[in-house]
Image (tube, rainbow, N blue to C red; front, side, top):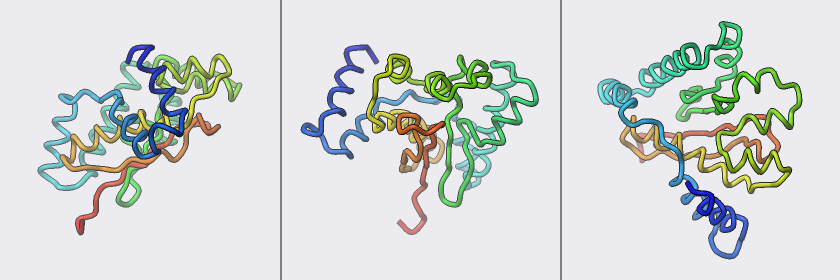
Length: 191
């Protein structure tokens, strides 16, 4: 997204006059970065074969852990810390939903883990350059902006299940939380 587009979106979501909350969420979800579709195909096939989210969830978790080990170079202690918190693209299965807590931006992950200052950790945490820039300048971004990050998970699980899912931002650094957590809810069979 270009700087002009980001500015336009921030202006729209900062104004109550143009769009209601649901419309803004829909716009932000639609602007999300997407997990590479081709990388999701084995998980999609596993879901088609089993009808259960557990198998593709485990596959996604294994892929995430391989990324942390091979691409980021985390040591076993750091891996254990991240996995024990339920951070990452797979999240944690919680009944008919998944609770996904984003990891800090991968390029900042090691700095984040070593940073003692909570405000600086929030700056390092976010994947979004618009949010990181605003936080570094002491500016605010409306928390609804985080539905862009929620859209990442919506696309991921809709691709795997080939069914619509709902996403809800439960925690956000823009609300002063230490992490960003997204609930991904799967439709019940009775719908």
